[in-house]
Length: 419
Length: 148
Figure 1 (cartoon, rainbow over the protein chains, first blue to last red):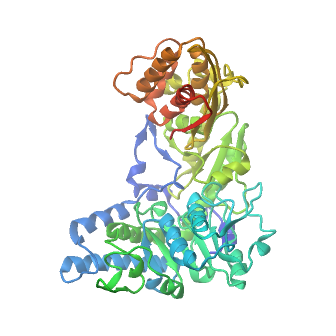
Figure 2 (figure 1 turned 90 degrees about the horizontal axis):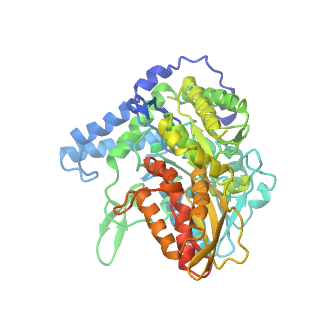
Figure 3 (figure 1 turned 45 degrees about the horizontal axis):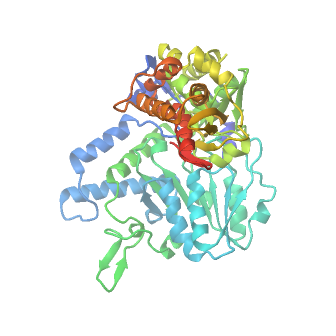
């Protein structure tokens, strides 16, 4: 599904049943401070369906062993489960081969891997790394580290007041010194869906490699790395209903083949002697040490879960929630929405006039409403707007319109308290 | 909601809306910057000490209601105190809010801060100004401190 289609999907034409979905998420059925939990902090971390919890549980109850040492039955089952999960990730991203899927701890680790193993060895003083103003710190700091290590320069695509990328000078920012374009698919602080396909096209026309940080995209929209033609795509499992501590790096096979290993250890080698070590083939070359097998199994189950409902259906429902919430918040005096891009995922950053976001967070929590208050690991974005923090409500497909009303009530209570 | 009313009671809201001693002391001989990078609260504390007595103390900056009110209350209370008394108060506030052993009850004007204890995520908002003034007293040049 392309980004333009995402907006065009009508609702409520589908047979999406939010109450049935909610029954899959046991954590949602609880009270916080005497009120039903309203979990609107999904962009920070999503909740897990029983299908994921049970897959992890079953793995530990029945199959647990180390992988790739397969002389006994459990090890073979663990290996099958782990590699089966890899193939699910491949299908989820529509990568060509399982060799292109490296399991990592999360998007952050994946970006660091590409920064150190792909970019650092080939970048020289004066070369450039291009990112944007609306990146998460995870897509800023690893590149700053490479710049410090090599004398390269960090260049930044500017942003507009609406929270979109200002691409008017994009073509000149892409030049012969640019060694990589590293760009977020969806902004975690503002919800902006960037026009990455067009951006990748322009970069590729100049043979500039592109990494896409998809941490905020994969929970909301279908991704096809072959269609995008990006060189690297990274994401974290825990934001898409899978366990924490597991994520994936997609890399084009030819690039991964040419890259040196990032970490050394067991599993990433074919043979070791004190005079010479031969590295393992892809993707194991990048998976030193015993991996997070249970996490990978959980990630596979999360992909199954999303695909069983249909990612397009989830996306359409979430978009509907975003539209309803945006309209309701816009109607409240003294509330300002931060990030008004035309194409947004279901993230709603806002300010309540004269109330600090941390006070907002505490007052909401007392009413059972969990939101994020802070800089969202995107301090340059906060600086752009001249604010220290925002309150952010972010929706998943298990949220309801009643929960949007709870959000509105929480805002009104806050305003009354501070009146 | 009753906990909320405890936290955001009238006194706190009054200090938040009309912070006392919210100004620079141009001839301050002690000064420190306090930052809480997690929430972006940032303030500067100025103090003028003479013969071990706090003749004047003030602050500027921005933050949540709890941090601004706590800083405002602090300046009111510290004015006229000796450094020794100020240190004792700092120690007491810190211990009382973090639940560390040896902390007494918060009394007088500071009583309103007691509600913060029930909100562990907000304790650092209330202690930021106190950490900052503590750092200012300890040094005769501008220092920066960070809490998280």
